[in-house]
Amino acid sequence: MGRFLIRNFGCRATQAEGAALVASLRSHGYLPASELSQADLVILNTCTVTAAADQDVRQMVRRIHRQNPAAGILVTGCYAQRAPEELARLPGVVWVVGNSHKALIPDILAHTPPSAPCHERVRVGDVSAPRGFLAAPVADASGDRTRPNLKIQDGCGSRCSFCIIPSVRGPSRSAPPDWVVEQVRLLASRYCEVVLSGVNLGRWGREPGIRLRLDDLLGRLLDETPIQRIRLSSVEPMDLSDGLLALMASSPRIARHLHAPLQSGSDAVLKRMRRWYRARHYADRVRKARDWMPEAAIGADVMVGFPGETQEEFDQTHRFIESLPLSYLHVFTYSARPGTPAAQHPCQVPMRVRKTRNRALRELAARMNLDFRRRMIGRTLSVLTLDRPLTALSDNYLEVSLAFPREPNRLLDVEIDGLSPTGLREKDPLPVTRGRSFASSNP
Image (cartoon, rainbow, N blue to C red; front, side, top):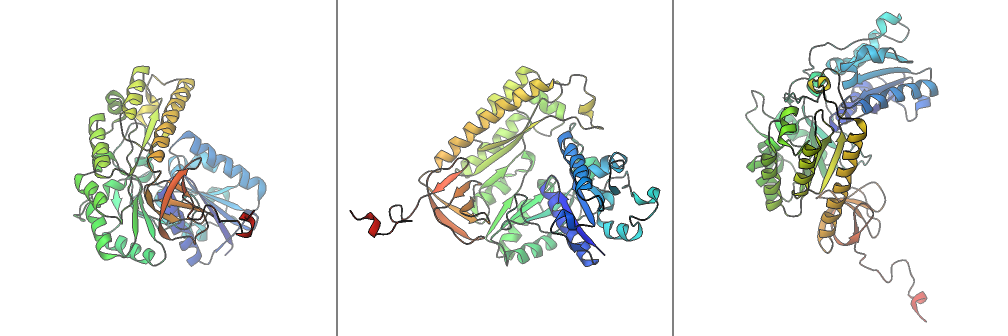
């Protein structure tokens, strides 16, 4: 059947769908290729959340076609759902399959081979929103094979004015709770930590028929599986219920790590973004999380340069973030997405202004993160050893440089005695004798 290579772009949900595609293709007789030069088929599982994400995909298509012109390229994912005809014009692209047909890729390949006439080779996804659910456990996007992420939710119904995701991923839908429990139980036999992910994770269980919420699911996972640590990827502030925060604070098996998208600290901007909360609501959730979990990592997504954002509105965001007990920020520069209301706004912020504001928030984020890391010196943290030599990840989402090698995929407690350039440093239990012979220490 040939050899295939998959390249995933974007979020953890995309990574999980890529893993499911690998399993599906292998079951249909395809063999994975270890290098591009060996591949007869290359699948690009795309993101379209920003213009830069689109550009990355186009550049990758051209690079693949240049390096292996004999390989057929199949483009799928969110970009393929949004702009299939645009992708079909790129050199080397044989198939374009939107999210609506992603699960059918093996059948599409079987019925539309590269030798088919050109007008038959490109399968465009339906314009209707996707409604299926495709996922499989997958190693973490950073490349470590010690932290599989499990997609348990897909789609979004929030309709933020800047976001294209609801139209390319469809409405919110949840993996069945029994399936989630079984998947985590299986993963627990191989891994210490599992990351639960979704396009809008906090909406898990909200559609008719489940009658559970995310904290209920976590309770089942704690009661019915032996998994040693569960980590949540990202939860919107309006879904951070007291019940969820209380469970996170009370269980040592849930990572002390909370990522809650903010986007802006200005109520006027949040209103134009069509976000479902205001700054005071966000502050209440974050401060309660800090009160209940003093050592937790609390991170936020922030967008700068949203259409119409004035200097005063940006200053409000800067002051608001300074007032919060955050540990890190993911700062994004606004990127217009065709088909969204924000893209039609008459007052687009100049790019030079967007970049200046981005830099200001990144500098603030660096200071906040340094303060958070300094607070960890002298403490003992629970860490997971990673595939990378001498590297571990703490339950509160800090990279720890280990004093000596340990086997990957192990949970252990380490004492912190200093900072590394981007994280923390473990205290060496044998600082004098390690790496030296006793004879060399004699006069």
